[in-house]
Image (tube, rainbow, N blue to C red):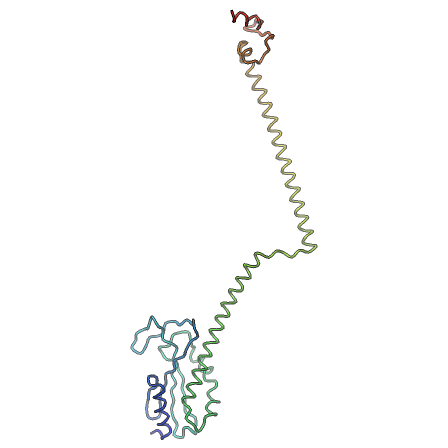
Length: 253
């Protein structure tokens, strides 16, 4: 049977944790400790609540279970404590049992400071604060990593707009390269002009040759009418010399 001080403390705890406290037996109780998470902290799906149904819209907050067993001499001696993770807690927030030691790190000193007094509420508060601090530190680490990724991406973008610092060595190297490029461009243009002149000369020679060939194929009358020969010129028609001026007078009669 619990002593009077234990009974009084349990009654107070029931009023503070009406839905969270469960009396296991005359010597033991269990308290569910919901842990608040920072704004924007992502919670993955849990293992389901006690009825086996998952709350899809509002994920169950991470919850710890503190089992307290009162020794007969409590509160002059410390209670026996066991901390575990509620099965309904979302995965990935806490890693039990490895996180248990971190969350319970301040419990021994808290017990020592409160010996002789009802201390379960203080112990619950200490555990809750430590668990929430652990989540905050992990959230800060995630945010810091995210900001570092963003910073690196911004630096990469800024690097695109930064030029190479100009020194005497880099300027001399640039000037040599620039001069070589200009010389190459000049040689290329001269070669193109030379090829263009050759093409023009070739086209002119072809035009003259074509005109000479056409002239040879034209009759005397066609040559005269086209103006290829003068009015006083004589030409041969069928092997005989023809006076073009006389021929023209005859045509006019």
